[in-house]
Length: 201
Ligand code: HEM
Ligand code: HEM
Image (cartoon, rainbow, N blue to C red; front, side, top):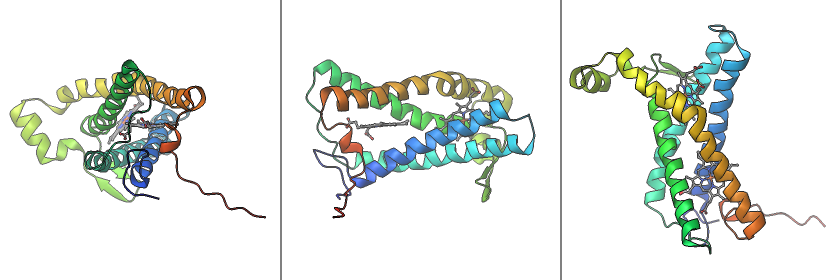
């Protein structure tokens, strides 16, 4: 299987990054909503769910960085047959997904007044303790962490987390299924792992 994208299909590295990030999104959502719905504040389960959310979120940040580099250094498969409006909608949808894939981990990290226990393997210091916070937020913007945190949290929790990302992902999955079952083109299969079945008889 080709590592790089071709004009007809995504390569194995792009597929690996796409599906790893999709699974990490699911895990980050499960952890944070498990915390909200099934745990009491400040219990060990409540804190573990939070640190898992932070760990999955930070992992998404790292994977997205690799994905953007890979995307910029690769061919993109040709657009499937369709109207100009369909092509525009697909492009806009992918751009918005990239915007949130980048903005959610950043706003999550810089808006959290707590360091992360990264899968309980090592500690990642909170943003407030970093030289970047001191230089950018404290010295340049003249803000305290509490003042800075408010709009950042609003974006992370109320705009991105609660509503927009879900809507975007649901439209994205709907579009993939529409292509596969209605238009019957290769848009979904060119992003799926190439599984070769062995003939057993
Ligand atoms: C793509 C990555 C991420 C996604 C999709 C995501 C999504 C969410 C969602 C849906 C919520 C709940 C919003 C609500 O209150 O209804 C949330 C809360 C939160 N996120 Fe993230 N997040 C991500 C990354 C991060 C990162 C990297 C950090 C920090 C290192 C972080 C820290 C937090 C914190 C502290 C909360 C509040 C927890 C709580 O109220 O229980 N997030 N996030
Ligand atoms: C069950 C879940 C998902 C399915 C079935 C799915 C399906 C697909 C398919 C078929 C493509 C290829 C589109 C094309 O060739 O034009 C694609 C691309 C893409 N997907 Fe998904 N996807 C899923 C989840 C996600 C999630 C959770 C995200 C991000 C939050 C995401 C972000 C993207 C992006 C940005 C692209 C554009 C390709 C690129 O440039 O990397 N997908 N997806």
